[in-house]
Image 1 (tube, rainbow, N blue to C red):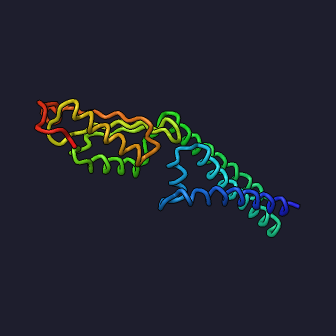
Image 2 (image 1 turned 60 degrees about the horizontal axis):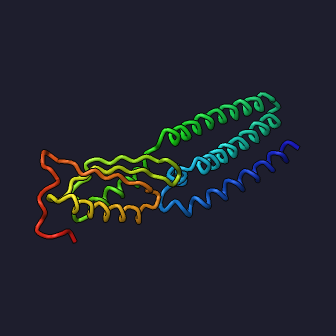
Image 3 (image 1 turned 45 degrees about the horizontal axis):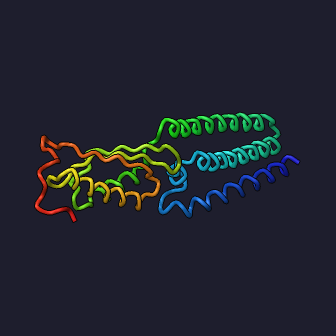
Amino acid sequence: MDYLIIRVALMAQLTSFCIRVRKLRREATGRGIWRAARARKDPSTFTVVFEDSAALAGVFIAALGLFLAERLGHPAFDGVASALIGILLAVVAVVLAHESKELLVGRSADPVVSEDIRKLTESHEHIEKVINMLSMHLGPHELLLNLDLKFRGTFTASQIVFVVEDLDNAIRNRFPDVFRISIEARAFRGQALLAPPASSDLS
């Protein structure tokens, strides 16, 4: 009877785990399963994957403890298995609390995403350098982005607005999760970005 219960639990947990992993594999785009789950910034996704993994480990530990207790005739193995499962559950609780806390206090964008945004920004013909970039997730698909930029040459305020709008559209089209962008154009090494009108408008 004990083995039947373990078998049913194993099948149920394995089914749930495989369904979630299969979905994440389609969204991983070259990243590992765990990295893809964390990158989604969705607590429910990471929670399901991590809990199912821990549940599978717990079932195997219970089965091993039961097998050793019956095979060797020492019930202590069953007790040790129970203790290990308790420790496993405690580790799961700590990890999930850490993940949830990061999302509550505001987690920055994935380093890969941040680097892609930096490369896209610096590839713009009128942007020389990203001086500083800050990001914060306000939700699974809500990324707040702040860019401090150095422009190529000097422009009027109206010209800078034109460049900023163009860059804003490029970032939003490439990264749909960026729902709000703040772009700062400040003096760099003592040179003001605002200057008399250039000979021709930006095009």
